[in-house]
Length: 148
Image (cartoon, rainbow, N blue to C red; front, side):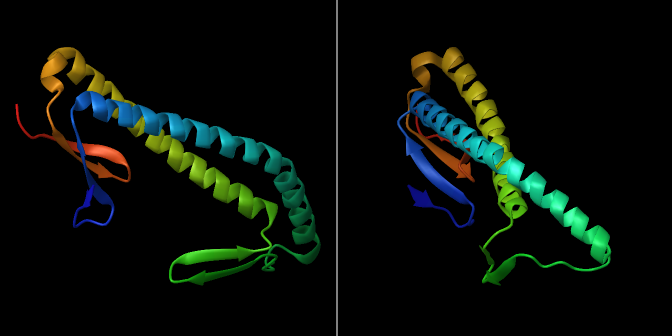
């Protein structure tokens, strides 16, 4: 696997479209498992986050909405945000953000899978030639058939 000049692109080689389809199916399976894990974590955290938000609203009503309440310590180092002793809502939002991004990626991979299945059905064994595949954020965006 070689890295291309664009930071979010990578290049992979496959022996054919069927091998690429297997790779995509594995990516889909892994994403589905990870999304379920995150959703389980979110379910556990939702009760805490809801209680925290109710408490925060009560404090805002007492203190006043204009007051800035900093209840979490977060620092940013070279683009990496580090949160110490996170609030339940911080954790929940991070999980939800990741889950949404993974679900978007899952949908994109499913569309790629559909196209690959059509290619395999139409070309059959003719699709078993070496290919270069350009991936953006792990999603195939370009297939180059190297030889027929």
